[in-house]
Image (cartoon, rainbow, N blue to C red; front, side, top):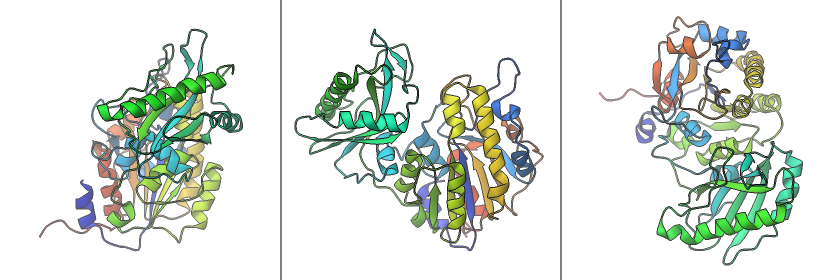
Length: 400
């Protein structure tokens, strides 16, 4: 559904929507057990919820398209990711409450490990600690480039934000992360003639960073991705006529929420502390975005058993989430991250929605094969928000 159509139909109501996004939720069968991570995990609470829900599989962008977390979440929030595009740099910057200006160009940075041949041996530098990464950022802050202000800010673990501030900057740059190991980093390539000067700045920053931290045994280089400027989009609270709050540990997901106009609770802490914060602020909002990260991190690390454990950890939160007594509860994923791939994938993502108005289907388990048999079938993720609003009594009839 188009955002403008959603805006025309949305109406206030005294109902609450709990929108749980399990990052990287979907998986693939283990070659030995022939079971996905969700099928393997002990998730009795999710299974019990599925018995009273409508289930299906969502497609974040399109058939065969592997989404990043940004497009995956935007689709769930009702924004067509092919129309509303934003780079990861903006999301990370907003997530740490950085005061991003309209003329800035921001990029998400990863500290990485290069071997003696200059090939990437670890794209995330072993997920170094946030404390160690912050020390590296302090060293990178000494970099000076002509004609621009260079701002480097720590995010979490191996991640940082790079911001160029000045006139005439352009964000149409190719990322330097090849998204695989055993190959050298890419150069920042201009995707339009006007972006050539900005590409030159990015490559000089990368070279300077290598000079400064190249003696580190682990985090000895940087990768840049998601070059972007701050876009102006319709705000979700205005479109849906809901007070929208976001509760997430990681900065990027707070950034996504802020980008679409949600009020983002302070980041950090744990899943439980974010849940308690949501409970404490239950009267303030109508729509609650609750983000769970661990399944995606385990999938990206190729750790099947860690992803199973992460899903079991989320399952234990379900009774506490249900105690909040939302009128609508959604359990969705922004994309699949199968551990056997060790990366995001294009596979449809398990989904369920429960309210007193749903048509409960014959699904009694929450996993990929069961959701494929659900009453919602396989459908675009951009339709999730209208479904949630309809089940909350927040959409008017269309037409006469």
